[in-house]
Image 1 (cartoon, rainbow, N blue to C red):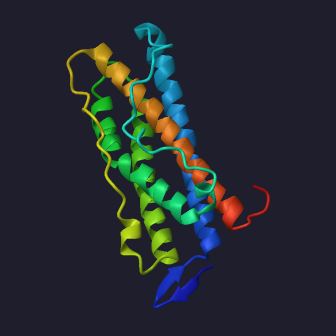
Image 2: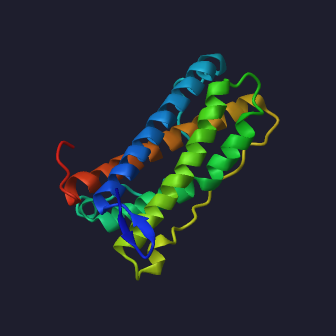
Length: 194
């Protein structure tokens, strides 16, 4: 059921946050599974089990301070920025990952699902911000972060290490998205059983 306004169906704010939280959790789990599958397939053979991570393109986004974690407008905007920052890198990852020799089919199909679901979640976050702050047009304009170089080198080992590092960054960022949306749901909307 939903509330009808101007001929459109609107869910309650709580339902919208529940949907966003569930979707972010599913994406985060799929990203972790993808990273684990990629790591298990390539890490030992290519010797980067203990490789130091290269700088993530989202590293400039610091972890919010305690006071900021209480403001769901800040957290929603941070979620939107993280999701927006991964739009192009996920597109490149989907296109380029399939060019690796022996890449597991499960990895490539999961990356495609992650890309599609992430784009859908970004639309949902923009909708939430429009519902909460309908007069603040800037609320839905998330900054674009530079993604770094595309991995089109001929050296297979370099490409595998690059994808490995991208997947580590993706995993960390989607864990943040999941945490931020759950903080909003639990603290600000006073949802029970969080």
